[in-house]
Image 1 (cartoon, rainbow, N blue to C red):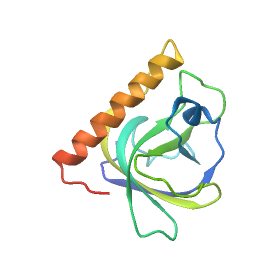
Image 2 (cartoon, rainbow, N blue to C red; image 1 turned 135 degrees about the vertical axis):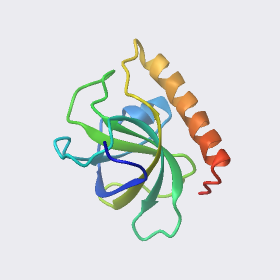
Image 3 (cartoon, one colour; image 1 turned 135 degrees about the horizontal axis):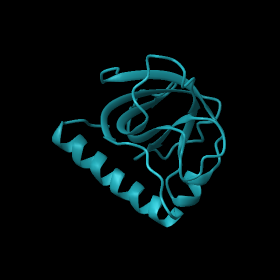
Image 4 (cartoon, helix red, strand yellow; image 1 turned 120 degrees about the vertical axis):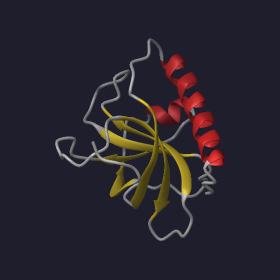
Length: 135
């Protein structure tokens, strides 16, 4: 298994828009799940830096197959916690995985998934404050 931190650079593509519907808009990056040098699938605390921007943003990111709504291909998707800029579609985004939060899991309802995302956001903020990660 690959160790953290792990950084990838990719182009933001349109996803299912489910994150936006749940109040957690995400920047989606396609990746090749067959590559040997990937962290395990799951939810992470990370940093995201859009191209041509000096600031990094704390994020929660998911790498995997989205078992609650599994349509489509595996992706990496990041919810930038304090980002209020323009849409990131077709822009490069550098993502740095900092800390593993939890494995992917299947939720019975979208409300259950939304509640877990809120918990993930709080866990990311707590971890970042404990480790002096500023964004």
